[in-house]
Image (cartoon, rainbow, N blue to C red; front, side):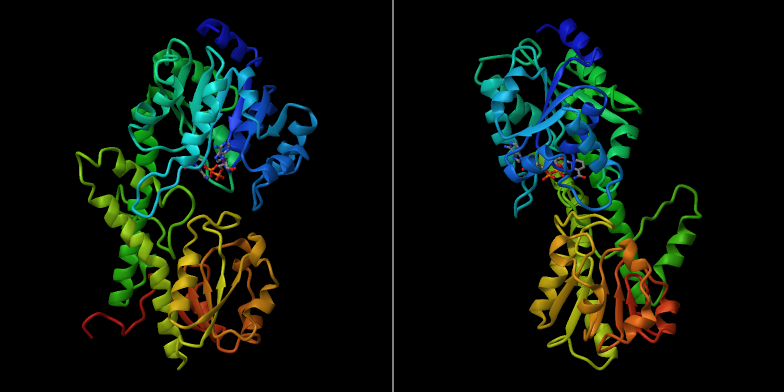
Length: 447
Ligand SMILES: NC(=O)c1ccc[n+]([C@@H]2O[C@H](COP(=O)([O-])OP(=O)(O)OC[C@H]3O[C@@H](n4cnc5c(N)ncnc54)[C@H](O)[C@@H]3O)[C@@H](O)[C@H]2O)c1
C-alpha cells in the first residue's frame, strides 16, 4: 500500500489496527481507536487477559474512569477483540506495539518482550503497513534494535516497504483515557512520511499537540521527561531527609521555597514505584553509556530507592519511643500499589519495606483496597499490631478514624510516608507519630 492510500484509509477510519500488548498502555489505546470507529484487534501472549477482554470485561482494576465501560462497549459493538495469534497482523494497516520494557538488575534494558513481539510480527508484516512503537525505549533502540528486526536482513526497507514510528506514551494509571486524549505526543518518524502518517492516525484520538520529530528525539523526550521527574522527586526526598535531620518540617519548607519564582519542589514520600519512573532514567542513561557517564541520574535513583528503607528506619524509631523493639514487632503496612487508588504493584516501595522489616525481625501484615492479594478487612489487618505504616495515599486511608483504630492496635504507633495525616491530628488521637520530612523539635543535628 502506498502513502496516499494508507493516509486515505486512516482519514476514513478504514485502516485496520492491531495493538500488541494489552496492558496499562495498549488496552486504553486499542479501546480509544475502537471507540472512534476503527476495527481493532488486540494481541497479547497472556491468554487469560485476552479471554477477559473478549468477554467484554476489563483486566485493569483500580480507579480507572471510563475504561471498563469503554471496553465493554467496543467489544459488544464488535470493534475490539483480543487474540494471541500473530497471523492477524497480515491484515493490519497499522501495528502498534505497547509491550513492557523493564530493566535488569544492573539497570540495563531487558527487551525480551519487545524483541519477541517484533520477531513474531516480522513474518506477517503487510507491505506498506505503519508500525508504531509506543513502549518506552532507550535512545538509539529504534535504530539499533527495532528497525533491523523488521527489515529482516534486507527483506524490506523502512520508508519504502513499511513505515516506522516511535510515539511514546505519556499516560498515568488512574487517568489513562483522559491522559490519552488530552496529553500532547511526540511522533518520531524513521522518515518524515512515517511521522505524518502516524500524526494523521493519532489525530482521531488525541486532542492535544502531535509534535513531529525523528525517532531518537522521541526516545530522548520520553526517557528525559521521566528522568527529570525522578531527579525532582529525589530533590524533594533529600530535602525531607535534611529537614528530619535538623528538626524541621519539609511541608512548610517546600511551601515557602515554592513562593520563590520558578521553584516547584515536589512532594517527598515513601518511595518511587511503578513500571516507568524507576526504570526510564536508566534507559536514558543507557542510550549513550559508552560515551557519557551519567552522574545525576544514578544519584537521584539512589535517593529515591533509599526512601522505603528510610520508612523502616522511621518505624524502628517510632517503636523505640513506645519502648518496643523492631524484632518481634507486628507491623501493618497500609498500601502495596505504587500509586494511590491504583492496583499496579510494579516496583512497589512497599515490597522493599516489607523485606527490610522482615530482615529486622518484624512480622508484617499488608492491606491494600485495590490489590487483590491484600484486600482483607482493614480492621482485622491492623488488630493487635504494634505499628501502622502508611505507604500509599489511597482515598480509603484518608478517612481513617484514628480514635477507632487506636482501640484495635496493640500499640498506637503510626508512620506516615505520604503525608496523609496531619501530625497534630495523629498526636491528638493518642498516637506516637513519625512522618517523612517531619523532624521533631529537639532532634536537631549536633544537639
Ligand atoms: N504503565 C504506564 O503508566 C506507562 C506510561 C507510559 C509508558 N509506558 C510504557 O509502555 C510500555 C507498556 O507498559 P504497560 O504498563 O502497558 O505494560 P504492561 O505490562 O501492563 O503490558 C504489557 C503487555 O504486553 C504483553 N506482552 C508481552 N510480551 C508480548 C509479546 N511478545 N506479544 C504480545 N504481547 C506481549 C504482556 O502480556 C502485557 O499484557 C512500557 O514500555 C512502559 O514503559 C507505560
